[in-house]
Image 1: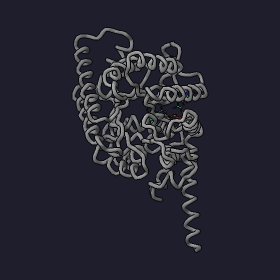
Image 2: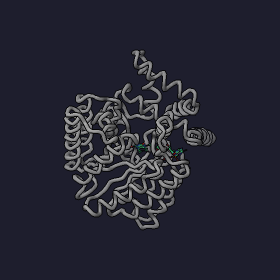
Image 3: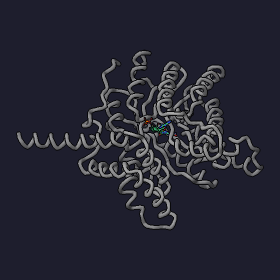
Image 4: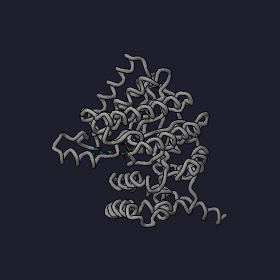
Length: 399
Ligand SMILES: Cc1cc2nc3c(=O)[nH]c(=O)nc-3n(C[C@H](O)[C@H](O)[C@H](O)COP(=O)(O)OP(=O)(O)OC[C@H]3O[C@@H](n4cnc5c(N)ncnc54)[C@H](O)[C@@H]3O)c2cc1C
């Protein structure tokens, strides 16, 4: 397909799924999230209120939950999926329940992911799905593996049970041809996650990338890791799937490194993160025969860089090995304009009971506050669209 110039400034396209009321609500919410102190209070108060059983669910659901999540259950997500599909945007259903730690919880998560795969089978509106390993295997066990400590017999049994759960998921994913992203988490469990992801890619990615891993480019060691992954995959003849992100745990990572006195795994500046992100994009595209790439970003410059690199390497914009992805409720100007121009685009669409999704919502609120300029951008775009609608109404009334 020929390349058509993409612009991210078309707010009419970006917000076509939002009516005036929804737009007004988003304005209010993003204004609140722009205030760091308020976000801090919200984070602490929400966790505390749920802990002592205060009835805040309704208020959370009507506001921040609705902005960033598709619903409390798979059924409830259908409205959002339909709307996204209408604009040629796929949904990556993300069962965002976090902080669970029992075998029963892990089975529940596994069953939910199997349900998503069943729903996605043969349905282009749900081309991928995803999981967090901490939703399937205890954080404490991942931490021990990462620290190269020996597991107790009981922990080993728990570990084996979780690998069995993963096998069930990936077997089903292979049969149904629905690739699964394994999300990246904190560095003190990530080496363990990488090990499992590589083991699963080796096992299930012989014909295509069914298992995809995530690389956080705010780490200074990830480019080298990417090259190692490629070398191994070429040698052992399996496909790899890579979701590139910048990374969501920057403050926590730097704080832990400082407190425990080790060299921070984080890049020394945002600029270095940006440089490595784009370098990784180039490496993935240069190996597009082997790699299925998902660029998980809201960064316009990186998105434009990826588009340009595809053009330079003569990769079709709808090449099934290249996907762009944003989080639901964020950067619609990128998502919908890319989709309209014919690129493969998806939204990560989190869902789950309000209480269980709170850690995800807090991360979104904090991230939006922390990114310099980003919140201003989201708000600016929404206000631009509100003004555009008002102007066009006035024009119509004048005619
Ligand atoms: C589809 C999708 C899937 C995702 N999956 C994951 C996942 O599995 N794991 C995960 O951790 N995150 C994930 N994220 C979140 C992601 O890591 C980022 O937090 C978020 O997207 C913001 O980065 P950005 O690329 O959009 O760009 P920007 O807004 O340009 O960049 C902000 C990011 O830059 C980095 N940064 C900021 N300041 C500094 C600094 N001083 N030094 C070094 N780096 C800095 C941080 O990573 C920060 O989040 C996902 C995001 C998307 C869109």
